Length: 596
Image 1 (cartoon, rainbow, N blue to C red):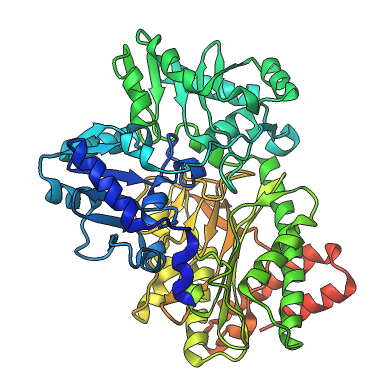
Image 2: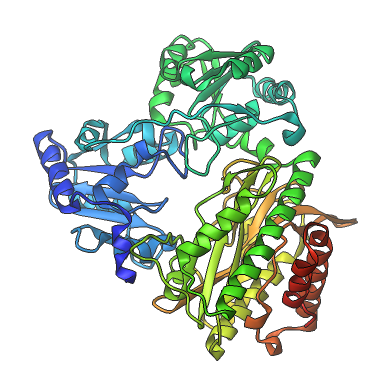
């Protein structure tokens, strides 16, 4: 049944699709083509319309690049998707390259070796300036997306409506945010800036939408000058009330595709943008402007540092999610004790039902992962009718779930014991928990980077010769993308120094292919700790309110400090949630959070 994960995408036949694509390459004089999972805004998660890589390959992960030559096809993806990709590519004829492993080439180096000096087709709208210019230095890259016409029955672009994210939740007016951006223009001697990152736009204008599943963003561009702010989006997304909101805040509206003509008329001006997020096709319209200013993440940082209203919103949202967790666990363990049949899909449905009952619920922040036994070893597993496991009284169930509420976004993972565990399972759970605690209790100087903290979460696993392939944490948006895309916590350097107000995750794990997975995740807030003669020091405040699985811990492996953390966390959890729970639920929570 595990192999039925290949059926995630209804395939025409990937062999036939790749053959059609290879014929197109030959007929049009190309040696190969590059198909990323991307949209014109460099989004991590994209509308169905842009899932071209999934159409040709059958692979549905959020990260990965398909490279096709006239005789070969290869998919490159990172460790989160190594298992899933192997299953979904089986029988497709597409070779899997597990990026990040020793001796695995980068996709463009592999392609260069295959095509030599032959031209390579790619859609420049789907690549940032930096990525396109890097490819141009290695390959004879040409902006040609004609092969996209091979996609039969391609989905339409989303027609979701824009809605206003009220200031009572955002904590700052649009006019204030625009003034902050205009000050950036002044400080950098620029006359206009191009905003293409969709969550930057949603934050800046206090708007939300539903163009991308689970990501409340609107397909659009924004240009800000000293005098004007223009949003380029589809008119049919704008209701009368939203139109009035834009007018009252001095925001002009133009059609989505009108941005190219608008920028063509700006050649005499100084333009500010982020080379890492602006797509190359838009850049071509401004690259001959009087002056170009590259300022990485210039709005992303403003968005990532949360204000006091947003922070309090997170705390309230976590209480709602905490109630969901308690009620779910009561249902789950009750079903197990009564011998009732529960499947992974049942778990996903119950969690969704409990979330929808909470006030100010908007949507889930991603599709809930409920992976039982060996499915828990697949990082971004999504159960289907074909892959759906029945949960037995053994092994682990990994649940990774998050919610968008009007006042905040959540992201939590818990690994549950479903019955009697082996000594190895308890050891692995405890090692992951020890790393989670070590990171979550760290004190560090302001400006410390995620790559400097990552080892804290891995140290106990490394001592046993174990590891995990994904990063340890990511930023979390405020009623925005659950992967915020600014601050990361991973071994690879990303250059961002931590400061108070960032919301992150703390989520180490371990994955035994074919056996089980374990991951423990809290959303945390970077908060002040102390000031000394050596500078300002920071800490993490744990925002998540969900019980750990105490039954899975080998307590002999814990230090007294680690036991103290768990006990203090549990007392905090009970104190925060008791007002929302009835007497029976509070009693159940007390049983889950006993002193160790």
